[in-house]
Image (tube, rainbow, N blue to C red; front, side):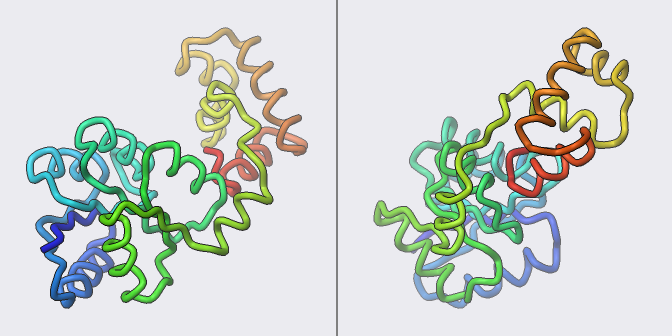
Length: 201
C-alpha cells in the first residue's frame, strides 16, 4: 500500500482529492493538511511514501514545504499539484527536490499513475508545462531582487521596504531598478506582476 499525505488549503478540494485517491486499491491517504507547515510536521511524524502539495497555501507555500521535506524526510517523494502551471514554479519545484509537477485539471487516473511512477524512481512533469519552462529561460532575478519585489507588492514605500528587509533606501531603489530592467517593465508594480506571472516569485 502506498501511503499518501495530501496538503491543500481549500477544504473542499482537499476532501475531493482524498476521496478520489482512496478509490485506488493500492493508495491510502494517511493524513491531510491545510498548509505547508502542517504538511511538513505531519510528514516528519508519519513518514508517508508520497506527499502531494499545492503551491499557494498559507503559513508555508508548497515550494518551501517541498524543500523542507527534501531535507527532513528525504525518502519521501514530493508531488506538486497546482492550479498555476507557471514555468518558474516548475523550475523552483525541481530545485526544491520535487519528483513530479502536475496541474489540477489532469484526470484523476493520471495523478494516481504519477504517484506510482515517482515511487518507482521516475520524474513526472506535465508535458505542456515542461515545454513552456524550456522556452521561457531561467529566472533572471537575484534572490534579493525577488525579496524587494515581494515586499513592494502591497504598495509599501521605499522606506517601509528598507525597514522590513534591513536595507538602505538606496539599496532598495537599486534592486527595484534592476528588477524592472530585467523584467522589461516600466515600474515596480508591473515588474512584480510579470515576475509572479512567470513564477519567479
